[in-house]
Image (cartoon, rainbow over all chains, first blue to last red; front, side, top):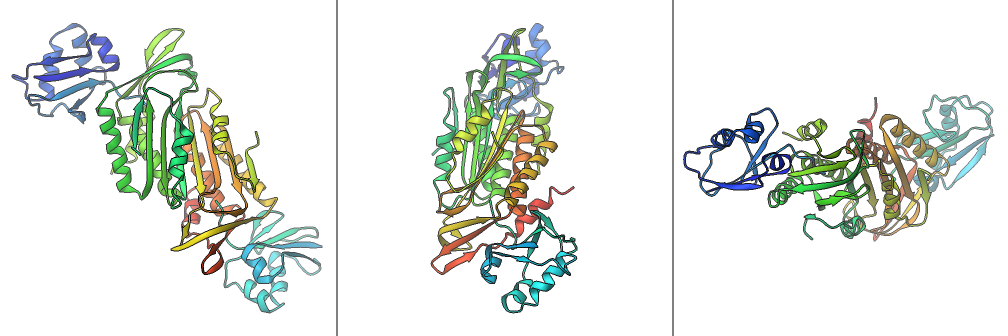
Length: 83
Length: 83
Length: 150
Length: 150
């Protein structure tokens, strides 16, 4: 299973703090984004590429080409605004 | 009269915190330095140009070409080391 | 003393500085305090909530501090960041760096806060008269961070 | 609140920071604390005496702070410098700058301390086991100051 987390504005837009996703057929972060996007509605909006979305894999910043493995923790969130 | 002040290492080398000097014949800071230097001994040492000496006229940094007038306050001191 | 703390409670700026100053080899302490303003983007802000990504936040900050310690000769580093609800005048973040001389302390302190602002997973949500809104990332933050890239 | 103080007494770092932080338009406070180290040039230093040029010191610092206020959008500036006898761990100088955002506060704070270190008439005399000695100017200080020349 891949644990997927959503933070801040994304969590609210998707009305979902996180979920477990079956890794079958998911080679990369880009594949995961594709699978989320086809859900339509808010998912299509968030992952269509129109708004900036950052991704971290196992709590390290990553990019869409990043390979995924069973057990990975993947987080999606907007640009950070701390400090 | 020109009020001349000496600070820090210079004050100790010259064994003099300050003095009044007759401005007659003193057009510039360079003239004043010349007059002090010819006193010989520690004065020659300090003002011969071998050690760094800074000068302020009326509490503003100045250079040897700076013109002098009666009533000016002239200070000689080493490079600063505060902070 | 741990270098990094994420907490909901207010922090004691004075205690941190005293701890860093307690080493007689320290000649310079540079501190950055970021605090909540009562106006943002022209609107009055009554409260703010800071969300973060627990686990990743600490890892990101530890990496930033470790990199600063490798780049500069530092005698002490402390980063404290608040999360949860905040009101105007509340300190949000403290970055304090001690070193023998000032140049290293200044550079390390600014390096850490620039990275934190552009890379550490914190998000601010403001409450204004017009409702709640997420704060947008400032363009200047990624520029400031880019300065440090080698 | 006066911007600049030269004094023989210890100063209250916390009180200064609290005062600067009291304005809800302030988003960033950057502070530099310079303190006396117990070792200099490899020798243990037991005490130090700071001499200054009364009158010129205040004028030089006022000019520096005025220039910083013209260059950057600042909400508060405080410079406190001690003179007279000091022992290790004693704070020597505090430069604290408040602004809306951090970039200006960092730049102004470093600008002021760089100028102070290279231009304000203070001189340190150290007491070591080998006797009293005047501290020599650090080459790096005039280099740091040269960065700000336009």
